[in-house]
Structures are given as C-alpha cells and as structure tokens.
Image 1 (cartoon, helix red, strand yellow):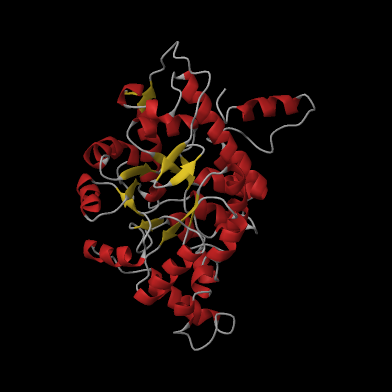
Image 2 (image 1 turned 90 degrees about the horizontal axis):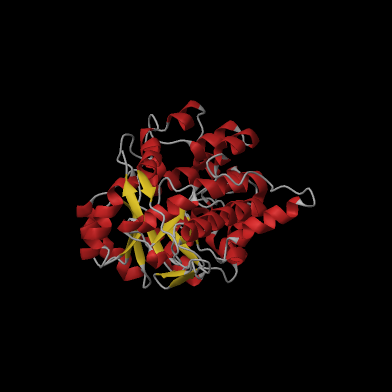
Length: 387
C-alpha cells in the first residue's frame, strides 16, 4: 500500500464505532460546506476571484479536459510518493500554497496551518500577508519544512528586513508573487466592502518589522490608521521589472521561485535570470478575469524550461487526480490553496490535517490505480486531452 492511502482504511474502521469524518472527504464539495460555516465577508474573500470568475472556471475546465489513461498489471501495490524539490524533502509532491489573512476563517489562522503541516511533513509556504508574525508561525511549525512567500515591498529596506527575518526563522526557499502588485477588481469583496488589510488583519509581518516601524511616528497600536496607510503604500500599486531580480538574489542565498508565470517567454526570462523555480499560476483566478487556465500552459512551459528550473503548479488543484494530471504535464509539485483553508474554517488545525490527508490519500490511490508507483513514473503518456 502507498504511504498515504491508509487514511482511507482509518476512516472506514472508525465507522465501525459510528464515527464519521469531521467533514466531507470530497474536495469538490468543501467550498459549499465551508460557506455554511463562514461569515459572508471572509468566505467571499477566500472563494472569490477577479471579475466574473471566468478564470477560476477556466482553471477547473482545463483539468476536466485532460483525462488519465490507466495502465494495468504494473506491480503498483507498493508506492512511494515522496519527492525532493529545491532541497526540501516532501512526503508527496504537494505544498500548502501561500494564503494570507487566515485568521479571518479561524482565530488560530496560520498557526493552526503550520502545526498541521508539520505533523504531516508537508511544506507550507507562508504569505507575507500572514495574520501572525513569521517568527510565530515558524515556532508553531517547529521542524516542519517551510518556505516564505514575498509580496515585494516598494521600499528596499523593508524588503531586506523581511528576507533577513525569514532566513533567520528557518524558511528555506523564497516564493516571489509577481501577479498581485495591485488588487484586481473583485466583486465579491467589493459588494461586501470587505478588505481585511484595512481592518488591520494580514499585516502582522509589517507591523512587527523594524524597518517598517522606523518610518512611523507612532506604533501601530497607538495609531493603527497611519500604520495601515503605510502598509498600503508599501505593498500595492507598483509593478517591478526583470532587472530588479538581482536585488532579491543579492539578499537571499537560498532558492528563489517566481510565482505567477503564464507565458513561455516569461518562463524563459526567469530561467535566464538565474531563478531556481517558477510556479505556473494565475493566482487561483483572483487577478486577471478571462485569463487562460493555468493547466493549459503548463505543458509548453515545462517543455521550454523544465530542464533549467523547477516547474511548480497551482490554480485549480482540488483532487488527487488534479495532482496526478499536473505532474504528468510537467510539474515537479503542486501548491494547493483553497481546500486546506476551507478545512481550517471547518475544524482549525484538525480541519487542515483532514483536508490535506484526504488529498494525499486520493493522490496515492489514484497513482497506484492508474498503474504508477512513484511521481517520476508520470509523463505525457499518463494523460490524454479530450474534447
């Protein structure tokens, strides 16, 4: 049996004592279940996307068009889903995507996610927009693997300070999000007039940063309004350029991954700039309405630069089959986002653990039943484009 599939047996055996899972094991139903348990503002912030939501639908449609082609008699009883990506050992090719302001869905927020991730050995990528300081999240994560996601500040001193803090706190890779230098038109948030940052949520890393605080006349506790205004001026409104990547390299000595790549030319530029990895991503459909589904561009990007940089993937990953398809089309690993946040909303740390264990078990079983014993077995022959 694979290393994660045992969760299925655990659930069935618990049923003999009339114990059901804490919530659904169907990742495609998580959103509907979580909506009943969440306030409209927080739920809309997590579930919503840019404009009409067309890009979110495109992400899911792209997965539906690719079909798995199972093989038989492949001796796939025993499986090993573990991989190593950019020096980080993982029990499966899955990371928890950087999602900010997690305290809007559960008071423990990123601390609960960090504990759950560590208990499973699954890497978490902490957002700059965390509800808790990165040092506190690192403490909750303990010996678990962790990466840091950077929303690139408009002030170099603050950027350097954040990078130094992340390195000191044991974050081993830097994930630089390129596509969110300003917020898209997001009707679900606008209709609720709901933006957590303006309420002082998701700004903990800035509000505990010495370089950020140095330019304030009063502390955030004394004058929260001015602190929020400074945060807005630093983290929104300015697009960067490729020439600026050298600045990050000079202040971060670990792997650097660029997140938000959707075009082959940009993927090649990332490789030419000496980046260590990219994430093929459209931010889960949250930034450009009408954009291409990320899975649609993954094969050509992987073919173009997969021998030069690690190609990771996110946007639309919900099930074990989704993980399988992304790997078959060239990704080294995937980042999963909304499903584990819905788990957080439904059950805190235990909810994250259940959602992630369900995904890992689903992937493990799909891998074996399709005739593969490890992620390296997957390739273009494992899937077929339909329709």
